[in-house]
Image 1 (tube, rainbow, N blue to C red):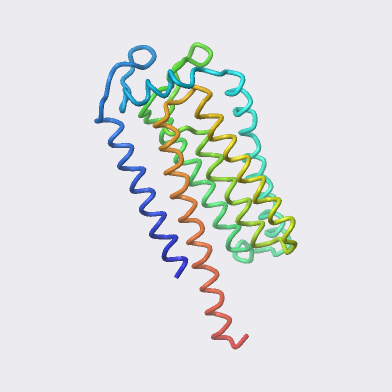
Image 2: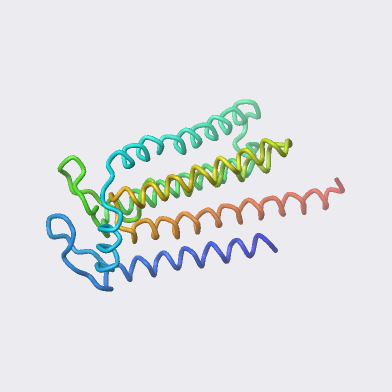
Length: 226
């Protein structure tokens, strides 16, 4: 039943993200952004931005640390490639790894879509340029990729200590990145909220898909009498 609950949770979260995206474009829209750009939830966004201020050092740190989830993606990609070479068939690569590849492609697609169709622009100029800000791409990347590291560790690592260490690292790193991005002042707070909703929803869909494939494997084995 967990797979169904995860699927439903993922759908609800993505639906919430879609609703949030619509609301941003219609609720309290004011010309308060850089170069007279319009921002939804303007009063709330401006209040929070003035509360935190701008901290470019923190922005730079979180920007560079954004390479960590990219490195994790590459590691899982290498794992899948090694399995493919050894087993000589794409169908023999572990299903959760194949689904992980599809999941990462989906995350990248979400990022590219919102780069091409800007909803919000950053509250500050980055090197003199006005950049798209919704949803926060760094937050989206971190919250999409880091949970997969913990998920795969619990599936593949037998030692409880390593599992717990991985969980602590993932949670601590993710919290630092989200909070750091939030208070660095390079995004509106609504951009961060959008990333949290989208990444959580898409991850729950991935988790659900893996559980469904696990269930299908168990069913096949029982039919074969294994």
